[in-house]
Length: 72
Image (cartoon, rainbow, N blue to C red; front, side, top):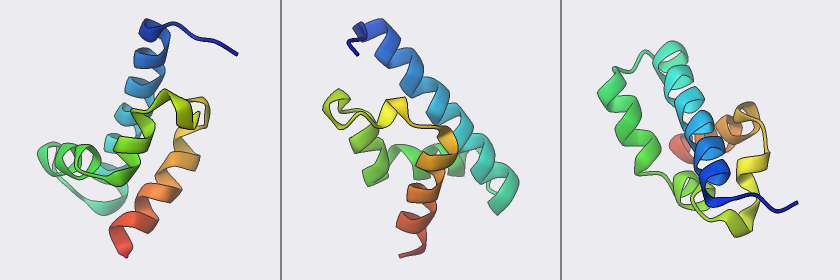
């Protein structure tokens, strides 16, 4: 399925928003700390590449990868 650049950006931003909210809720991070962790992650690099298709996955799926990355 082909999506426009704007649709891709919106889908990515929704996942990022959810990831930040979950980090704040589940790990007690401040918003700034959560932003920094998400945007500095390898997951964000993959999420930013439309070729990976990661933006089609649920935020829960992406969060499991982020959690694994942060705990390793």
